[in-house]
Amino acid sequence: MEYHELPMLQTIFTDLRKGRHICLEDGPVYEALAADPERYQTLFAALGLNLICHGRGFFYLDDESAPRTAQRMILFTAILVEALDDQGVNLDLDLTRIPILPAQLPHLQHEKYSRVMAEVDVTSEEALLKVLDAMKRYGLAEPVKDGSWRFRTSAYRLLDILNMAGRSLKPDEELSVPMETK
Image 1: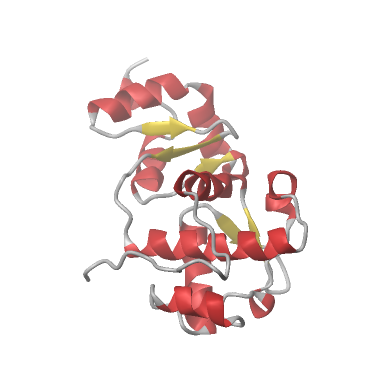
Image 2: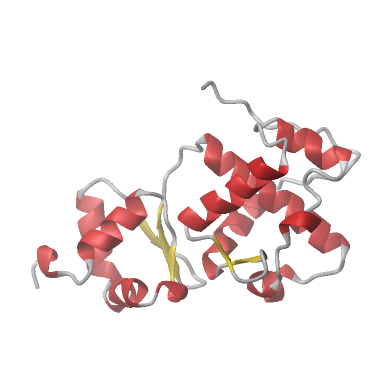
């Protein structure tokens, strides 16, 4: 099979280049990619792109740069993870099952969190919803019903990033985010 004959190549390429993470919930797009990941990886490598197949069953392009949107999504997740951990939630088991209710998020309700979110220009509920919308575009979260959201399987990549960075938002530590010039 020639590379141009790979199923759904244009959709897969476009989605991945936009930063989307493709997982089982993406149906036919995921199935096409999962059916022959090595051929897609070879093609993307020839284009200078690194297609990653995560151990939890999703795909993304490895991009070492961290644009402002990525910083917001990672901070959003770090804060939510800490709040859920404080409630005793086992994120390894429950991440995709936890309803995210925007009105109940701790991001702007607690000074220690709102200070960190302000460093990435998220200071209102509207801005917080824009972070969730960005997570939707990237295939990391999705709205479900009654205004609630949920993480998709690919959101485990955010946990991996947090684990690699060793970021902790405990009150006794200095909270800071590297600022990027606009």
